[in-house]
Every structure is written in structure tokens, then in C-alpha cells.
Length: 252
Ligand code: IPE
Ligand code: IPE
Ligand code: MG
Image (cartoon, rainbow, N blue to C red; front, top):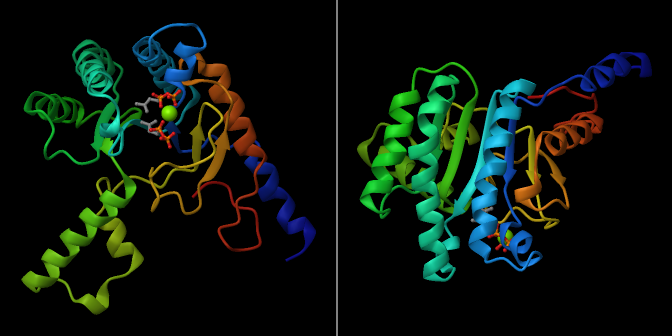
């Protein structure tokens, strides 16, 4: 393959909008502390940033946006903060679901549903049911989500099939594992953004991020907006995705 062969593909990257963007919405507490406000105020303002970001994602032409809204490990926070985060999720679904539906957004939920408060479980199911047939932006809410837990769930589902005799252990491939994850039909994220300056995945999409581009931005989540999203996408567009090969590839 000559240099000339590689050029056009690399150039095409510059105009590529990532199909799937996943966001670790971090820094709500620090945003509030920096202003002498209680952490909960940061979470409230974080919901506003989320609304802006969903709108911008649709306008930019992103097909799937996944947001990390509550991790399996976040239960270790003080009960009052956990309670507030649950209330914010309830309020977000109650206030915004109709609008999301009107905007043709399809809502999906990933994470452990067992053990949640029953009304929260119902709200999550209602959001998925109502928007099931929508054809616009797919909004994936990672709630009570941990990637290792998701992979363990997949392993249990695979083991159950093997026990039933519907699957042979020798036939299990990476594609099989992918099929048993929480949202098997969705493409892997092309771009994962983490706000607040932290540079780690914190148990988010460990399987799906194998070839994702990672962009870490210093902005605290409540300050995130369309310009910040576009800046992260521009950084993504500078990257050369190789997937283990040699030729620059655009998207997955
Ligand atoms: C992200 O902000 C929201 C959740 C994890 C639920 P944080 O609450 O983690 O804010 P910092 O990281 O403490 O600033
Ligand atoms: C990751 O942020 C979880 C969410 C954004 C929901 P954390 O704030 O919980 O992550 P750590 O504890 O800093 O790794
Ligand atoms: Mg944090």
C-alpha cells in the first residue's frame, strides 16, 4: 500500500461525525464546591448540561449517545447524595420523556435493573417502551451500570444457554459475548468523552471501548455544552483509527 493510497482515507476522517459518542459526565461535585454550593446543586446543573448535550448530539448528526448517569459503585456515596441522584433521575424522566419522544429520540437503558426501587424500574421501562419505535437519536442511559457486572451478566446468560444445550462452549467467540451484553444491537462507541480532567474509565463500557478513541476534557460536567462537544469531536477527527491494521479507517 503506497502513501497515496492512505491519503484519501485519512482526509475523509476530517469530516466524519462519530456514530456513537459515550460520555462520562464527571465533575458535578467539584463544580459545586468551587462555588461554595452543596454537591447536589452540581448534580442539578448537570441535568441541564445533559439536556443541552442531547439536543446538540441530535443536531450534529450523532446516531447514538450513551451517558454514564449512575455507576454500580456510586451506591457507596452518602445516602443523602444517592437519594438526591435517584430523585433527579425520576424528575428527568417525568419532565423530559414526553419532549424526548416528540423529538423522535429512542431511549435505551443499560445496567442492572434488579434491586432498584420499583418505581424507578417502572420509569426506566416506560421510557424504553414509549420510545421503542422512534427512529432519531438513540439515547442510552447507563444507570446502575458497571462494565464488569455487565460482562458477568453476559457470562451468566451464556452459561444458562450452555446448560440448556442450546449453545456449545466450544462455539463461544467474542461475537457471542457481544450478543449477550445489555444492548447487543448497538455499535461500539467511536468516541468516549470524560469531563472533569479525570483520565480513567471507572468501569464504563470496558468491553465496547476496545477501539474507542478517548478524549479527556478539563471542563466540569455542568459547564459542558455544544461547543465543548464539537471540540471533542474535532479532537476525535484528528485521530487515526487503525484497529490493529495499518490503513486509517473512518469509523467502525
Ligand atoms: C458526576 O459527578 C456525577 C456522578 C458520578 C453521579 P461527581 O458527583 O462524580 O462529581 P465529582 O467527581 O465529585 O466532582
Ligand atoms: C463515574 O464517575 C461515574 C459517573 C459519571 C456516573 P465517578 O466520579 O463515580 O468515578 P471515580 O470514582 O472518580 O472513578
Ligand atoms: Mg466524580
